[in-house]
Length: 324
Ligand SMILES: NC(=O)c1ccc[n+]([C@@H]2O[C@H](COP(=O)([O-])OP(=O)(O)OC[C@H]3O[C@@H](n4cnc5c(N)ncnc54)[C@H](OP(=O)(O)O)[C@@H]3O)[C@@H](O)[C@H]2O)c1
Image 1 (tube, rainbow, N blue to C red):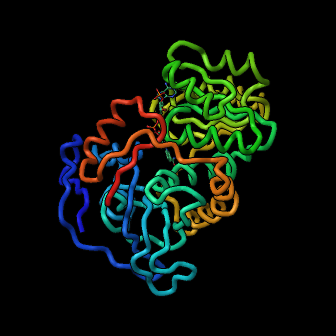
Image 2: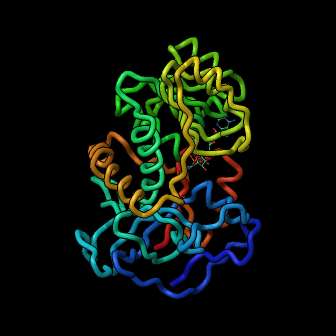
């Protein structure tokens, strides 16, 4: 098969479309003939040598894909050759084939096209595990999503609305604010011009749940924006990793701060998240209430151009890499 290989860490030109050995299905795994993969911000860090794959994971980039089951390993139940699937990967998505533990497979939901389904596994598992399983967002609460126009943000808006929450997002331009409102966001704040703390506090009693991609630079202001009993979940460190946590603010609000990552979790935890996504979120996708949001697509052989596009910014939703 062919795959995108990174011969040494560096800029997007270091991603090379080249011939490599086919994977085979180990016990409990299936091999997927990949239709499409998608670009994640973590891929940019891995390309730069700042985010090595966890032990045992493929060193080929790519954290999700869609495609057709091509091989089924020993002990796998419930999946057949030819099934249309999408999958959460620890690596290996920038290729024509990938081997993946069966617990990380999801069926292609409802009317979603096979290629478009590659935009779902990472955002679905990240948003559901953090906003619902960890932060326990419930109907009538307020969800603040930083980076509402990104891959995670566009999905979180739809999930938040489907759960009956008031959804507030931060975005980098008025145009992106408008697009987030069209997707369902109740309030969209241009973080370059407006103070999200002021607006959240003026419009609500505070955010019950905050899904944060910025880390250090927003830590203190996120505490200010939280409601009493609020839950801040940090999933990204785009604004730095070390900040000062004012425990006085946390105590006064009886609030909580959690930080999580999906990729490094043990297989059993990933499988548990995928199972919850399939049971609770997939019906919403099957009904078209939650849809993949795809900003741009590139052939997989041009993964370097896709990385440049994500680095430049301005993409609304996900970037796909098509493999066929
Ligand atoms: N922990 C995990 O398991 C996990 C899993 C998946 C993703 N993540 C992380 O989650 C974050 C979002 O991922 P993604 O796939 O959605 O990436 P993405 O599509 O590249 O989106 C990044 C977002 O960051 C926003 N942003 C930049 N500066 C900002 C600021 N000062 N305030 C608020 N937002 C700002 C951008 O907004 P504008 O473009 O509108 O300026 C953009 O929407 C990334 O940091 C990623 O690494 C973590």
